[in-house]
Amino acid sequence: MDALAQPPHDRRQLHLRRDQTRALVDQHRDLAARLAQVHAAHKDGNTRMDVAVPLGVNFEAEGVVPDTSRVIVAAGLDDLFLDLELEHALVFVDKRTSILNQKLKTLDEHVARLEKEHDMVVKTLRTAFQLPDDDSKA
Image (cartoon, rainbow, N blue to C red; front, top):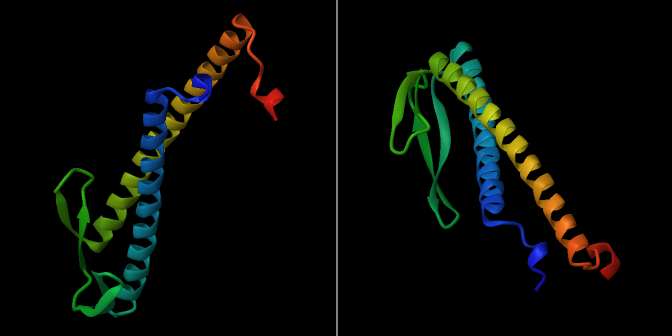
């Protein structure tokens, strides 16, 4: 096994954090789109919503939300949820998405910097120990 081909542990952890943050951003964008749909339906006078509730193992039950004027949203901390009016939930999700996008941008910059440093160290070690490049193995 080529030890130089393995990324350092902290770099793998940073990749994992970046991927988790990216998934969270996607979830927030999906939530914002769904809230916008509910808000549009609410403006049209449709305050009731029929939903499929997942029970697990690919089973679902029909559910009815009689009043969609209030929404419960995860605040971003473990076990902390907020009961917000629909308009406030839209604003909250937009702000949370922008914060997550800033965090994702910072993580992308850190990952790029670490990858550049790792590649530079690998290149230096290959040159110092006169090891063949990965390209010449193919």
